[in-house]
Length: 456
Ligand code: FAD
Image 1 (cartoon, rainbow, N blue to C red):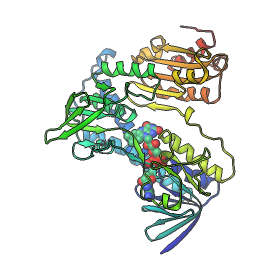
Image 2: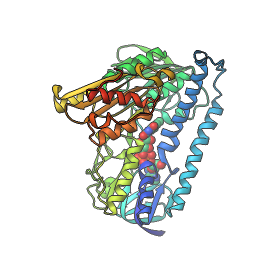
Image 3: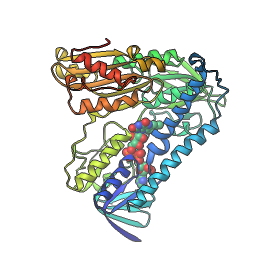
Image 4: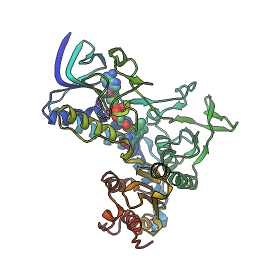
């Protein structure tokens, strides 16, 4: 039995945990970072990074397939899945090595193994007792399934989907949210027939409705099928494939069923309840400063109710490290966190949807402007369709920006500055945008809402 003492102990080295460790070490704390698998967590190993590498390979496949319209004679001869995996893993492994190096260089002690909270200041990892003046819980999330729907065989989650060494001919995807549509996009570009089943009335249902509708049109055009507003009933598996039955009696045959119905908090059996941490359906409850009900015990990332996004986890981690150091950081609001759905086309948004803005401010107090990317030179060059919708309060700030089109995720940085800094369209409209870029489309929407439309 050995005992190790730190200023800060962090349970879980995903986006939230490792960001907290890096910032705390900068602020002079000794840090013990406990990880049962690999530093970097879900995002680096089975989430953001490997899926975006797949999407990039998918974009290259589409470019080859569509090359003739740009006057380039290229053909798509097929997808070499092992080579795609090699490319993807080389990206992940180089980021992993970089992170390991950074953690070491900062003097952070990593402790390998599964930790369990045994008191407000102690985590047990095998025979090691790790104590800290403060403890951050950062154990992340796992893929959920539906009651009665077992994962196994041809019924898979995103984690098994990343292990596949072949392109399935036909895939059914349960869930039309970010993860479901992301895999749909990759597989469709690689040549699969894809059907998405979504119980809510729209794909990407968390987005502004006008964007969801455009997204559905784009997916339909790509030949991706979907059943909306209908619930999954059952699935049967055989050696040949799966048959999915929906509540309306419709059946879908496919090689695989990907279950992408959200992620649950990975907190079971880790001692949190026994130590008295207040929980709700597995999530750890915190106040806005990410304090649990137990002094000195904090929680960050996907285990805290709200958006499950890597950049929220990073920011949570930085916030708690600064809070412990007494720097009084600014509280993170879930409302104004930028969100991107990575697919072809991309969707990006920040702030309130039109519906929520009208509920909050009243119908007449909200003004929107929808700029069609058809008017934007760079979008023409990229041959992308889509739009940018900006929502403002009359005589007030920009409260929401919603975009759809190729690569619009790269534009969300400017939009989130406007929303988070409560900028009025009049403040940002005079700022220049390089020409020709898709950023100009955002500038045009700001100009229009400031009463000075240029190309509109
Ligand atoms: P995690 O990253 O899950 O890290 C938790 C860590 O804790 C893990 O490493 C785990 O091994 C460790 N751990 C758990 N229990 C213990 C224990 N008892 N002892 C020791 N270690 C333990 N977000 C984005 O912002 N952009 C994206 O593009 C994006 N794409 C995604 C794609 C997919 C397919 C998935 C699944 C997720 C995606 N996400 C994306 C979400 C993102 O990955 C998560 O929001 C983020 O990883 C959450 O960080 P976290 O630190 O809370 O948890």
